[in-house]
Length: 154
Image 1 (tube, rainbow, N blue to C red):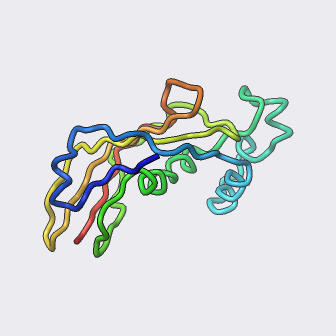
Image 2 (cartoon, rainbow, N blue to C red; image 1 turned 135 degrees about the vertical axis):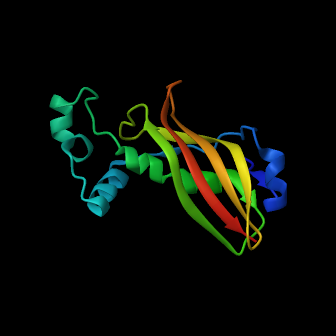
């Protein structure tokens, strides 16, 4: 899938209000879930106990942590959007996040990005506000809806 090309900070305002094509699909494996649990200390059984999930979970399988799915946003964006190199880019935070559906193990997810706002910053910077919606293959409902903030300095 071809990336959307946004040249630089000066080009960003041309993209405000436009929904970009979806990213490539990414498969959420049990190994990813286990590594995330290990990294965060979140070992809740619904994520890591395959046998218990078969018996007790309404999904009959493990599900990804909401924060694991959220953490995929930078890589999904990088796979979707190409920009000329910058001096520095930083994640500035989130305005809001909702985990709107489960992500069972071995699901495939992808993201759709919409640039909501661009603000100029000193030192040739731009703050971007993105609406990011992550979908699970086979479901019309999103699994994550987030408003993310990023800063880019050229």
